[in-house]
Image 1 (cartoon, one colour):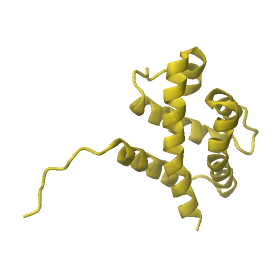
Image 2: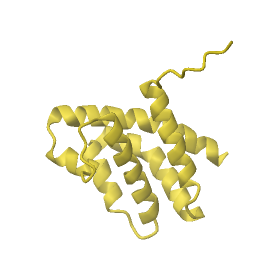
Image 3: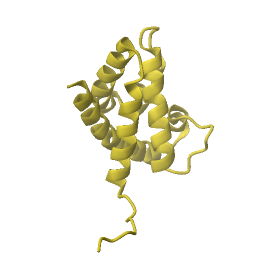
Length: 130
């Protein structure tokens, strides 16, 4: 007989599930916004690597009018994920504020977590476009 009790999800499984939900939500955006979202999801890991998480998030905050909804969706997604993955996180806090006000240890942990999360998100976004 199959075991009915479910095991808790690993951190990788949690990342994947959250990224999957985000990628599916992005499909509700209009065609231009969906394209902007997909492009930015693919660019973000390199931007983080080159300039750091704070600068990459600041670039998302300065989105132009054609990209605003897509970038807000991506920022909200990262905020929600980091609230779960890297506590403590006040519901009112935003990731960029935590990066600016946080110490170097938090920045390292947050950067590593965002990069790991984006690995899943990029895969799912790529898969949905095919």
